Length: 166
Image (tube, rainbow, N blue to C red; front, side, top):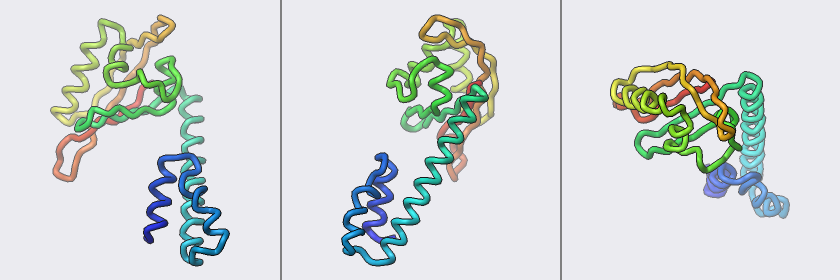
């Protein structure tokens, strides 16, 4: 992959329209080779396909009232789908939905259970499923089920937890 194509791929992942939009005028002026134009076209097609797939996944989660999440055990970073935010009663991208914020959203009697489930899975590598009570920002209790699965490195070390909430 050429340097410009790699740059385009890197930027397009981080910004809507990203480098693909930035490079389009350069390509139209004929400064890039035909191969670069083909590569860029493929990247644009792949980006459009990924956006369409993400839109479909979000719609399915909304209809099914489920959400997916991933917690990187090395960094502590929590990544959530829009469905998780909806179930928590917040807006997608809400900065308060960190690991600590997500744990605090559970009923006070369930918070310890959630921590124990996550710790046990991280230590043993075992999948889990448990009914829990979530308290929304409106104070309303929601009964949910959380299922989790461990991701492992090539060496077999548990590196992340992936799960769904429904």
